[in-house]
Image (cartoon, rainbow, N blue to C red; front, side, top):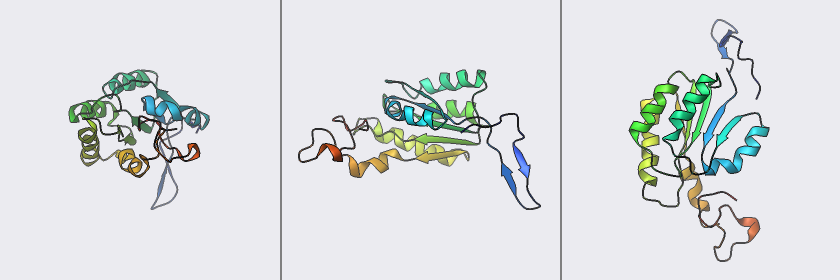
Amino acid sequence: PPTDSSAPATTDVGASSTVHKRRGTPLILGDSVMVGASGALRRAGYVVDAQISRTFAAGYGLVLKYRRQGKVGDIVVIGLGTAGGITDNQIDKLMSLLGSVRHVIFITPQTAGRKFEKASRQSLLDAAQRYSNVTIIDWWLLAQPYLKFHDGAKGVAFKDLYFYRDRIHIV
């Protein structure tokens, strides 16, 4: 969605209400799971930077890069964590750069039971309690009922697939 980044952050529309104008295009940083959705997101007008095997720790350098380019607006979506665990310290380091962003959205990883999955998810859920500008999209929870519909599952027709054989990447 195109925006006018030179416009004021808010517009007074009356004595009791304020409408916030969004600054900048929403920025989405992701890993291999986000790669699959990146085309549709770009066509919708979002800035998407997604790469296979990208770790959550790489998010810090990406945010620094986009800040230097003036491309961190009011909404940043982080979809990292499939390629390795997420710690509270990593989240706090990333949030040190995103504290002034109006809306930071973290997507919990769904990694088909890898050893770091539950701890990573919990760290993200806990971040929403520590930071008032954080929202969680709990992909892990949303995906659970559909994991049985993967490529290679017995009795599942191709048209009914949700996941590839790895039960991580979306068809």
